[in-house]
Length: 132
Image (tube, rainbow, N blue to C red):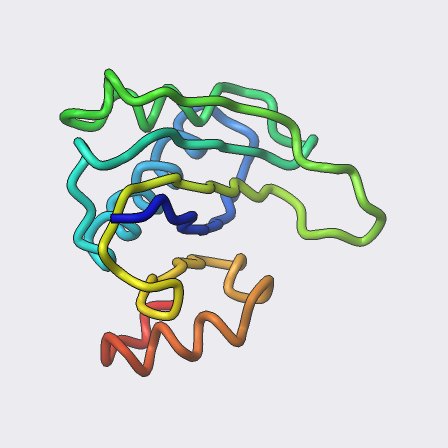
């Protein structure tokens, strides 16, 4: 097994605790599902949010998922870059896996599909889904 990084991002409609919570959980569930992640193999999770989001910590949403309360989580603000996507939550999961870099599925949901259309296209082809 090697430690690999699995990326993902999503957006929220508004700066509210509920919106951040729902979108973050949806993103984490989808990353876990598509990569068949065993939580015991997760070393840590790094979460960022664009600076227009400050209603709550995305780590709270992850920690409330079954089995995630013991995983080290860290939140940080995303860089404030002119014309960058707004209302965006990003995640980087460090996990032990036997999968190669090429086999990992990075997940981009909602408006965040625009961040990495190349990854979303590959994801759609590998899963047969057009969910994004």
